[in-house]
Image (cartoon, rainbow, N blue to C red):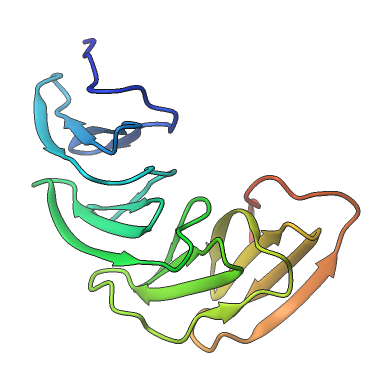
Length: 178
């Protein structure tokens, strides 16, 4: 099937058991069922960024914060402001959602409730260059000042950081625990 969107989309669509969700540049989220019929539409998400889906919840970063949407119904569960907006893809780690703020902080909240779980984590670098990656009990970020760092999202403790040679422009990858 082929569908016309309300506006262009520069983010990759998310494919779920319920169908496909697309974030459009005009701030509209549109979901299509597997047969191509429109399932739901949510307007008013400013500058939607790269989304993730976990356990039937779609997490949508935007120019002013992050929102959680129940994929099956298209109902917004919560939306919270993040000072400076969100930079890159969020990550879910168990019951926690971690998003990188443009103001050099990581924000940690409840994945289902959206309630802030702890104070923002200050990054050692000058801001996150991409999104965050979560694995096991760690969160990995790459910063604009060539630093790669890992944190414990529950405590906010820095586990380690290393300075590289060159700008980090993408989200890290974790494979086989490394």
